[in-house]
Each structure stands twice: as C-alpha cells, then as structure tokens.
Length: 440
Image: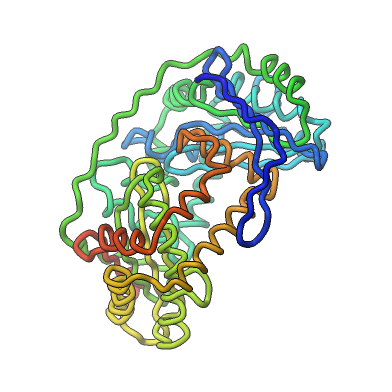
C-alpha cells in the first residue's frame, strides 16, 4: 500500500456534545506485508501496542469450528523466548495490562504499558507472531480453558444461546460460515490434531494478514526503527484467498423454537440478515437501533416497558460484520404476557418507521447521541488503537476514525424510513421463541 501520512495538526471540528481533536496517524507497510499504523500522543506516559489478525470464526473449517477463538487463548501459552505461563506475569510485573478478543471476522491482541516499556510490548507481539510454541501441552491446557468458558457463558448461562448466537446463526445463515458461532464446537476441538492447529497458525497468524498499531507516548522515528528490528525478519505468509458461499435472500419468515434449561422467563428474538458493515445502510440500521431501544426514552423501551408494561426488557442492535450483518431485536415478557403480544408491539413500531418519518426532534436527538459516542470512542489510547486497526482491516479506510461521523450526519430521516422498509420485514426474518426447558 502506498505510504500515507496524515500530518499532526491542531485541527478541531465541532460536535454537538464537545470538541474532538482529529486523530493524526501515519501508516506504511513492511516488506513482509505487515501494515503498520502509528499514532503519537504525548499527553500521558502510556502506549498501546496492538496486533489485529484478519482471522475469525468464518475462516474455520466447518468440521473444526472454534479454532479462531481457541487461538485467542493458545497464543498466550508462550513462545520460544517467553516461558509457558509467563506472558501475564511479564505484563503485570512491568506495570502493564493486556487482553484479546475474537469475532467472526478478526482477532485482536493488545498490551498497554508505561511508555518506557514500548520495546517490551513490541517484542512480545513479535514473539507471538514469529516464535509461538504450539505443542500438545498447550493445546490440552487451553482446551480445558475454552470448555470452561463455554460452560460459563453459553451452556450454563441464562440466554447464552441468544447472546452468543448459537441459537440464532444456524437459522439465519445456511451457506456462509457465519452460520456457526465464534465459540465453536468443543467436539471439533477435541477431534483436532496438533498438526491442524500448527497449520492454522501458519496460514493466518502471519504479517501479511495483520495490522500493527502503536498508539500513545512515542517518538515516531524511534518507533519505526524498533518495529523494523522486531518485525522485519518475520517471514511473509502465503496469500489468503477467501471465496465464501453467498446466501440466498430470506423470502419467508423462519419460525423456530429453542429451549434453555437455565431460564424461567421466555424470550422473543426477531432477527434479520442485513448488509455488510461497510455499506451505508448498515450505519442507518445502527441509528435505527439507537432510536428503538437505546435508553429509557427510546421507542420500544418507553412503549413496552414503561407504558404498556408488557416487557421486562427489550433491546435492538445491529451486529455489524464484514460480509453480512445481523439485526436483532430481543424482548422478555413481564409476568404472563404472551410472546405474541411482544411481537405485535415491536412490529407496530417497525411499521411506523417504514411508513412515517421520525420527528425532527427525535432525529436531532439521534445525531447528538451518535456524535457524543464518536467523541467518546476516541477518548482513550486503547480506544484509538482499536479503531485504527479495525478501520484499516475491515473497512479499508483507516481515516474513518476522523470521518465516520460524517456518514451519520449524511443520513436523513428519509433514509431511516427507506432502510427500515428494505430490511425489517416479516418475510425476511427469523422469529425465534426461546423457551424454558420446562415448556417442552
């Protein structure tokens, strides 16, 4: 990629709830294909070093689901130069913090240290990329860790199947690998050989499938030299070709019943397959989510929880993803109210969105909320590092960190009505009744 430099400036732009300074950054590629993004902010003596790999659950073999999430854990096991079990001790003993997370589309690792430990953060991430130790002891150890996580978050957690998608995705997707959840199958992990784990690492955790972000109290020239020293020798991987099967449009409502032994109150889920996160319609759906269920004055909450007292809780959100997104509306009934009543009340609000323009007052409220969220998302070094990596990798536009708010500002009330009419229709959705096991 052609080297791009956004010079440090003092440019400010006014937003409704405050003043947000433009995030200056520089990006370039190493010869091995590693994309590098640098953001200098010397206002506090901290630095975040992060690496995002373009690998998520959608990149897995259908017979080996759960690999990407498994590697989120496995690559903390140790390296050639970091003894097994010492990763977190090294971070904490040097005043740092670290974490990682996995989605359907990418895996993200980061460390935040006092800025005098920049070298340490870069060395550790280069070790993870260049010298990971993948052996049977580590695989067996993390297998138990992942199993326990699945038991806690999905199997034994109320509404775990809804929250983590295991009850939704297989019905909403039939062809695309979004049909399985990020947590994957424990049986698939048990059946995998050590060679399969090594092959997965060699394919995806390579510099040309990653972006390195260093943000915070740094000197740009010094940081570039350190990056070259630590990452320049990492060998380039083979090109990764993705050609996932496409989904046919949903033309008839999919009706499904799932059961959960951990709940006593049933739930209603109305789920729609929506466009990729890069499309403008996905931004409109984000606005619709805010309008319907963000806060106690939102339309669904006010109607169903406060006024009609038909729902204990209701919320809507657009789960933005690289290839297709998922728009979900979940509701829990209050008392003995039937799920059919919740469905009717939700559909009434959707119909209003499809046939009427929201009020100018509500529209301005939406804009204010989104601009406030935009400012807050860039208020920490960790948040900036995450945004820079995500925008480059999944949107192919690193500068969205400065310009994304303009997309929301360009959305009109007519756009909101048209997008609701285009995607939020009964014949295009999954209707899932999520019931207690006792209801069988």
